[in-house]
Image (tube, rainbow, N blue to C red; front, side):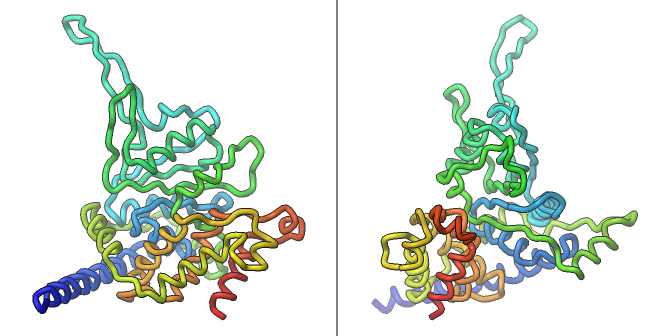
Length: 336
């Protein structure tokens, strides 16, 4: 019995040591990104949390708010091979996944060869994902879920790690194909990108219109990122935090005894929201320089994790309510 205890405490010590190493790496990543992306702290934080948690993120904001720049910067800082696809209505699944081409050798024998598409990257930027047709969207979303693709019956594994950071413009809905609810659920977080604060915008003007632009440096590589992602899954989560996650996620579902939810919410988040919260809370603790997630992590993550996993009733929308208002109310109730 004593032997088992010692082993457990050794494991604990190893996890603490690994977490402390991860803390310094993450602090360096934050510092490097902030040299290139000014302001937008919560956007940077939530996007990095999605990657540290091993998931995908959907960035929603009007054009010109440095969403693309953030993704390319992250690719460089995390040492990942990055690709970018600009989505258009005429894009076909093969434009993303790749296709088979016919080769002919010197003797005239013909054979098929698979040419990999841009999805074969470690960090894929899917720009304006709602412009692509449902067929093309589902090809990408399937690869996000399964980490492999199948062409002509042949399976091809995607690189590890594999992260999709997709962007969506909330203004133009004409001629676009909004992502279905089941596919939105594939994104660990929805990150809203707002206009920058005055001081940050001033810095943007001064720093980005001269001759020399700051280039970020690689802080870690893909292998180290996988180590940190594994560590995130090993971090202990207290019962208090687990109970808070369950209470918050369940309170966002109609029919669970929450009066305001019953009145305003048409359908609520499924278990995947709780899983996302468990992972991201641990990653956020590390990001903030702590070794264990707290209730504050849960409340801070409520909006990015829940907002794309629930919908309001027609009556609530008619009253001008937004999903964010409902989530803010639930967080307020949870804080008591």
